[in-house]
Image 1: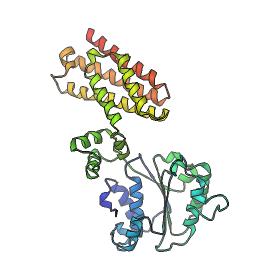
Image 2: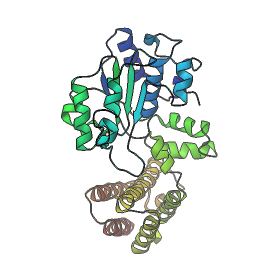
Image 3: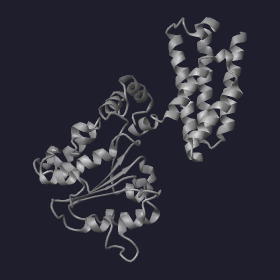
Image 4: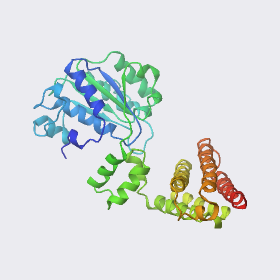
Length: 350
């Protein structure tokens, strides 16, 4: 499928930066495109590369026609002057073979070798390294040699979440371009346009939670995660009947069932805590605006309800820090729900 800049949500400032660099003839040989996962950095890198190759637009326009030979070949990954690599399926690092070639062919194949060759059909060669922070030590050092003496007419784009995961010597030889999360409205539009969700209401709900990341939005489509969110909302709407150990056992069981590893369990526990915090914040907003229908208002009064929910929110944030600090998920959640129940009981006795 042919791509265009119109399909990219946000990042107009970053695009203008590259356009100006091309217009002034000041394009660097290497850039780090850094920012949270799932916000469009890879798409930006491919659009930038395709714009460099497009035959029907001047470089300074940074545009894509979609019709020329270069655009059509690029769309089917057949343009000879474009190289794109990343972590191979089933691996967790970028091996040196992709950067500098397999053993026995070191220096005679791989990304660095291809960049050293003269362009075949364009004025320059462009290489994109996805998940660049996952290069192993050998790979990073091999790339460093190319960055120290970059081939003429080459452009290297390193895509990563955090530039600090790159060797300092690599960072110092690249210009770092920061990318930021998309707006909730942009995420909502993508979810609807790509038919990832079935309704506008569902798109708006997920967009509000996903922190501007399409990757996180897709995670939130997990039915188990949504079931967990619904369960949390139900428990917190009935604080007067809260049984902390029973709630903790229920949510822990749900997290364990949907997690295939310790890392995933911690990630899902953080989602649970996010759901708890969001539920508390929603009730805080309601009480602050005088929601007389809220059971807390009816039982405690609006002011006392706010005085209860604020420390509940602080306690939930503290639990999130404990998960980040590698505390056992089960113990953290049991203690959290026990403390939330205690806070409610104390408030109810006043």
